[in-house]
Image 1: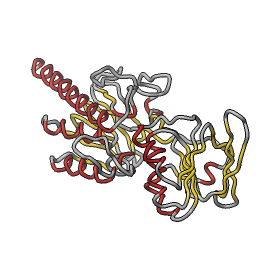
Image 2: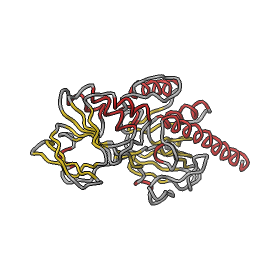
Image 3: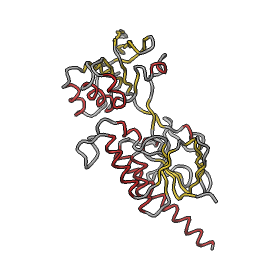
Length: 314
């Protein structure tokens, strides 16, 4: 007889690991299915300075500490990529690309979000050949070179500051004249002499032979264009939810995020969603962890009710 978990958590970010910790401490048979490394986007974040208890810590170190905490309790990690989720019924079905099938009484969806791309011609051609979506992953390749960062949020500001310590020059391109990121990050960026702000502008063209060599930047107010010769472009224009797999089943917002109630419950009994994948006013590490704790607690209550029904039938 195939094993039926009490809870399967799909994704391995901070919210997922928090859910795993709470579930294990509640006595649930739980496993986390993650396709790559624990921590999700946090693992590639240069520095985290707003998570309580750590004045400053790298994203990789924080992810590792969470992973060590989770595994120390005996939470099982399954290193697979999910290909299909069947959320209806008393037993939920999760299939992976390796051809394996997992079953659970409850599931928590924690797939997170993926980076948004520019949508320009040649973008795919230049990925890994000048275009990157992760400064901490690829910044070292651009030592003493000229790079640009496109975006206006915390990630763009953090990446610009990080790259300014590696690259010779950094262009920070933003579509508005004010940044959406934290004021403390804006001030840090403005202290760096090798960061040049290119405001009210967007990237409109990518040029190069076999690697990216130049970008065209268009001023949104004047429609004037200028070309910047550079070695690398880091795209930081946000993330979109990875909900394609469940779009035909779960209720989604107009933006594609999973709609939940305050207890992280979706429109399917026993199915919860947490973190960046769900509709929420704030997407931070601390809120993802909160989501995970709530979802896991409610999953435990759901399973407890199922057990009571089974006992009554007997």
